[in-house]
Amino acid sequence: MTPYETFTKSIRVWRREPLLLYVFARILARLDIGSYNFRLHVQAFDRIGYAYGVYQAAYLAKQLGHDRVSVLELGVAGGDGLVALERLAKKAEKELKIQVDVYGFDMGSGLPTPQDYRDLPYHWQGGFYQMDEKALRQRLTRAKLVLGDVADTIKTFFDKYNPAPIGFVSVDLDYYSSTAAALTMFNASSNYLLPRIFCFFDDVVGATIELYNDYTGELAAIREFNLSHPDAKICPIKHLRMNHWADDMFAVHLFSHPQYNTFVSEVDQQLKLKR
Image (tube, rainbow, N blue to C red; front, side, top):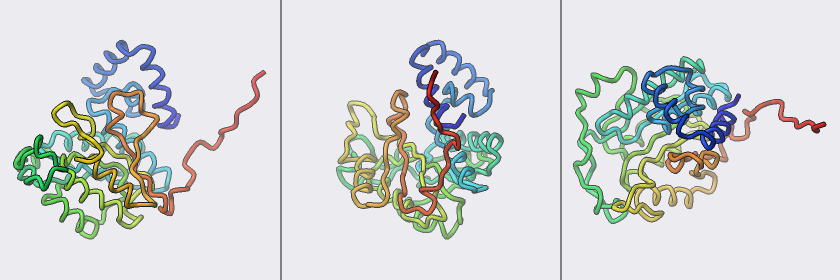
C-alpha cells in the first residue's frame, strides 16, 4: 500500500470510529511501538504533521532513486520539535532504508524585532522563544544547528553544507519577513530539492488574537511566493482535509524540476469491469 493509499484509507476509518481509534493511537504513540507506516495509518504520533512529512519525503526520495534526503526545521526555539524530528528521521531510515539528514535553523537569541505590520507585532515581540543552545546540543544526536538570521543562513546553507535534496520543511518562523526570506530556499538548484517538498507551516490557523490572514504572517509569505513564481507553487495538501491538522500541511510543487514528471506511482492501475 502506498503512503497516499494509507492516508486515504485512514481518513475513512477515522470518520467511522474516531474515539476508539484516538485512544488506540494515543497508546501506540505513548509506547512508541509499531511500524512507521502502520502508525501513520492510525495517526499514532504526537507530531503527526512532522511524521507525515518526513515519511513522505523519504518515500518520494527513494522512489526517485536518491539514497539520502534532508528534512529541515526552521524555527527551533526550545528544541522539542528538532528532537522529535531526529527520532522520526531514525524511524524513516530504518523502515525505508534511506539516509535522512536533519537540520535546524534558528536565531538562537529569540525572535528579532518585528519589521512592520506583516510580522504581527500585536502578537509577537522580539526576544520570544530564546534557545538554550548548550542544553539542546546535549540532547541532539544527529541534527546540525544552523544559527543566525535565516535571511543570511539560507544564502550560505547550500554551499556550506552541500545537503541532500530537501524533502520536508517545518516552517515555524512566526514572522512574514523571516518566512519570506526562508522560502527563497526553493529557488536553489534542483540538485538540492525534491520536485515536491512536503511542508508544515505552524502559524496559519491560530486563534482570535492572531487572526492570521493572507496579507500577514506566514500566509502572506506563501501568497507572495506563489504570485512571484510561475513555475513553483506552495499548495495545501487536499487529501488530508478531513484531519484536524491538515491546515498546516502544504507541498511545494517545482514544475520545472527535471524529476517533476518522473513516474513514482503504482504500476498496475487498471480497473476491471465488475461482473
